[in-house]
Image (cartoon, rainbow, N blue to C red):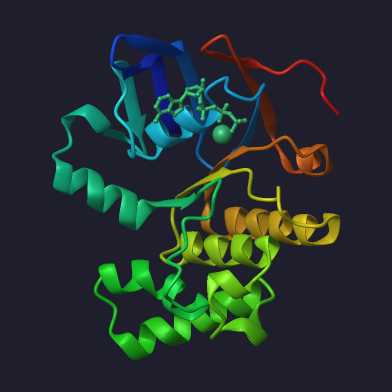
Length: 228
Ligand SMILES: Nc1ncnc2c1ncn2[C@@H]1O[C@H](COP(=O)(O)OP(=O)(O)OP(=O)(O)O)[C@@H](O)[C@H]1O
Ligand SMILES: [Mg+2]
């Protein structure tokens, strides 16, 4: 069964008269339970592809099915629900809310999903413990290291036990040990809950966690040649 079926995706960015083509007929298929890593040069379109897969950005053309749903047929509300309930997104720049504590940041998706406050806080605390931040529940992003912020972002992405994890450079700000820990956590979740993951990374230290590595080149996705 496929978790992701993307065919012939095209996406250009337009600024005034300038058009930057980024995706040019990208095909990308991922089986349920598979961990696929995406590599490729800076600016090749990895984050753009991930945003499209996460229903955060609409392609100019092409077809996309995520977890069996044809994305172009979804209403805005259905797309939001799919994103909230089924997709955990770890952004390249964390996207944490500065004025909120680590705990409150992780509570956001739980509250959006209608969890009562007490239950949400218990769940958020448990997630933060799992990513090694039990001592930082009250800390604000501005007072945490990049690696700690990254872990808060990961805890938030996992809050609603998504079926699909999309992570943009999730270990870029982590030391080797924390990077291995986070990937081990991802893999444990994937094994226990049939979770699928697409991970953009430049980090060869985590390549061994991938089932398959693909490369974004000239707006298309292809199997990566021996990288490790
Ligand atoms: N919102 C935007 N508006 C205009 N151009 C954009 C926008 N976002 C990205 N681009 C351009 O699209 C291209 C692909 O960007 P993207 O962020 O997808 O690359 P990437 O592969 O993730 O790069 P990196 O490895 O540096 O994160 C780049 O040339 C970038 O400048
Ligand atoms: Mg990027």
